[in-house]
Length: 137
Ligand SMILES: [Zn+2]
Image 1 (tube, rainbow, N blue to C red):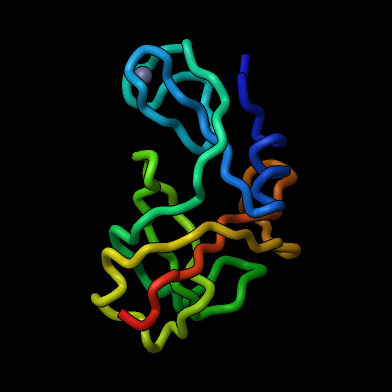
Image 2 (image 1 turned 90 degrees about the horizontal axis):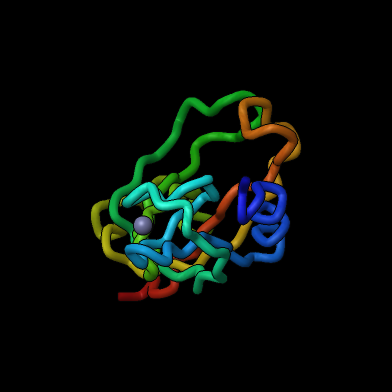
Protein backbone atom coordinates (compact mmCIF):
# COMPACT_ATOMS: atom_id res chain seq x y z
CA UNK A 1 0.00 0.00 0.00
CA UNK A 2 1.08 3.53 -0.70
CA UNK A 3 0.93 5.68 2.44
CA UNK A 4 1.23 8.67 0.15
CA UNK A 5 -0.27 8.23 -3.30
CA UNK A 6 1.09 9.83 -6.44
CA UNK A 7 -2.26 11.61 -6.79
CA UNK A 8 -1.84 13.19 -3.34
CA UNK A 9 1.77 14.08 -4.13
CA UNK A 10 0.87 15.84 -7.40
CA UNK A 11 -2.21 17.50 -5.91
CA UNK A 12 0.02 19.10 -3.24
CA UNK A 13 2.62 20.03 -5.86
CA UNK A 14 -0.06 21.94 -7.74
CA UNK A 15 -0.29 24.13 -4.61
CA UNK A 16 3.51 24.46 -4.44
CA UNK A 17 3.70 22.07 -1.50
CA UNK A 18 6.07 19.11 -1.34
CA UNK A 19 4.95 15.94 0.40
CA UNK A 20 7.36 13.17 1.24
CA UNK A 21 7.58 10.10 3.40
CA UNK A 22 9.55 10.03 6.63
CA UNK A 23 11.03 6.72 7.71
CA UNK A 24 10.30 5.77 11.33
CA UNK A 25 13.26 3.37 11.33
CA UNK A 26 16.13 5.43 9.89
CA UNK A 27 14.61 8.94 9.79
CA UNK A 28 15.39 9.36 6.08
CA UNK A 29 12.96 11.16 3.84
CA UNK A 30 11.66 9.63 0.59
CA UNK A 31 10.38 11.63 -2.38
CA UNK A 32 8.67 11.22 -4.79
CA UNK A 33 6.39 8.69 -3.05
CA UNK A 34 7.40 5.06 -2.96
CA UNK A 35 6.15 2.03 -1.07
CA UNK A 36 9.29 1.82 1.05
CA UNK A 37 12.02 4.05 2.49
CA UNK A 38 14.50 4.84 -0.29
CA UNK A 39 17.41 4.53 2.17
CA UNK A 40 16.70 1.39 4.21
CA UNK A 41 13.70 -0.24 2.53
CA UNK A 42 11.51 -0.04 5.63
CA UNK A 43 7.75 0.05 5.13
CA UNK A 44 7.37 1.94 8.41
CA UNK A 45 7.00 5.34 6.77
CA UNK A 46 4.58 8.19 7.22
CA UNK A 47 3.61 11.20 5.06
CA UNK A 48 5.22 14.52 5.97
CA UNK A 49 5.15 18.04 4.58
CA UNK A 50 8.54 19.22 3.40
CA UNK A 51 9.80 22.78 3.41
CA UNK A 52 10.19 22.89 -0.36
CA UNK A 53 13.62 24.44 0.19
CA UNK A 54 16.90 23.05 -1.03
CA UNK A 55 20.17 23.76 -2.80
CA UNK A 56 21.27 23.04 -6.36
CA UNK A 57 23.63 20.06 -6.60
CA UNK A 58 24.06 20.12 -10.35
CA UNK A 59 22.16 21.23 -13.43
CA UNK A 60 21.96 20.95 -17.18
CA UNK A 61 20.50 23.00 -20.00
CA UNK A 62 18.11 20.98 -22.13
CA UNK A 63 18.27 22.10 -25.76
CA UNK A 64 16.45 19.18 -27.40
CA UNK A 65 13.18 18.82 -25.49
CA UNK A 66 10.81 15.89 -25.24
CA UNK A 67 7.60 16.38 -27.20
CA UNK A 68 5.37 19.01 -25.65
CA UNK A 69 8.13 21.08 -24.05
CA UNK A 70 9.81 24.23 -25.31
CA UNK A 71 13.61 24.29 -25.16
CA UNK A 72 15.98 25.50 -23.99
CA UNK A 73 15.31 25.17 -20.28
CA UNK A 74 17.35 24.54 -17.16
CA UNK A 75 16.92 21.31 -15.19
CA UNK A 76 18.59 20.94 -11.81
CA UNK A 77 19.14 18.24 -9.24
CA UNK A 78 18.22 19.79 -5.90
CA UNK A 79 19.27 18.51 -2.48
CA UNK A 80 16.21 19.22 -0.35
CA UNK A 81 16.77 20.55 3.16
CA UNK A 82 15.24 17.30 4.48
CA UNK A 83 17.89 15.22 2.66
CA UNK A 84 16.52 13.61 -0.51
CA UNK A 85 17.40 14.88 -3.97
CA UNK A 86 14.71 15.96 -6.42
CA UNK A 87 14.97 16.85 -10.10
CA UNK A 88 13.15 19.90 -11.36
CA UNK A 89 13.25 22.81 -13.76
CA UNK A 90 14.64 26.17 -12.69
CA UNK A 91 12.16 28.87 -13.62
CA UNK A 92 13.86 32.16 -12.93
CA UNK A 93 17.09 31.96 -14.88
CA UNK A 94 17.68 32.33 -18.61
CA UNK A 95 19.30 29.15 -19.98
CA UNK A 96 22.04 31.31 -21.51
CA UNK A 97 22.95 32.63 -18.07
CA UNK A 98 23.16 29.24 -16.37
CA UNK A 99 26.73 28.58 -15.28
CA UNK A 100 28.63 26.91 -12.43
CA UNK A 101 27.65 29.71 -10.07
CA UNK A 102 24.23 28.01 -9.89
CA UNK A 103 25.70 25.16 -7.87
CA UNK A 104 24.89 25.58 -4.20
CA UNK A 105 22.22 28.24 -4.79
CA UNK A 106 19.21 28.04 -2.49
CA UNK A 107 15.94 27.29 -4.24
CA UNK A 108 12.27 27.00 -3.35
CA UNK A 109 9.86 24.61 -5.03
CA UNK A 110 6.90 25.65 -7.14
CA UNK A 111 5.24 23.85 -9.98
CA UNK A 112 4.60 23.94 -13.69
CA UNK A 113 1.62 22.41 -15.43
CA UNK A 114 2.72 20.54 -18.53
CA UNK A 115 -0.38 20.27 -20.65
CA UNK A 116 1.27 18.72 -23.67
CA UNK A 117 3.69 16.40 -21.98
CA UNK A 118 3.50 12.87 -23.34
CA UNK A 119 6.16 10.88 -21.54
CA UNK A 120 5.28 11.24 -17.89
CA UNK A 121 3.79 9.39 -14.97
CA UNK A 122 0.24 8.27 -15.69
CA UNK A 123 -2.14 11.16 -16.11
CA UNK A 124 -0.05 13.68 -14.23
CA UNK A 125 0.99 16.84 -16.00
CA UNK A 126 2.60 18.77 -13.18
CA UNK A 127 6.32 18.93 -12.46
CA UNK A 128 8.48 20.65 -9.85
CA UNK A 129 9.65 24.12 -10.90
CA UNK A 130 12.27 25.63 -8.62
CA UNK A 131 13.02 29.33 -8.16
CA UNK A 132 16.44 30.55 -7.12
CA UNK A 133 16.15 32.58 -3.91
CA UNK A 134 19.50 34.37 -3.83
CA UNK A 135 19.96 35.52 -7.42
CA UNK A 136 22.23 38.40 -6.43
CA UNK A 137 24.90 36.53 -4.46
ZN1 LIG B 1 14.57 4.15 6.35
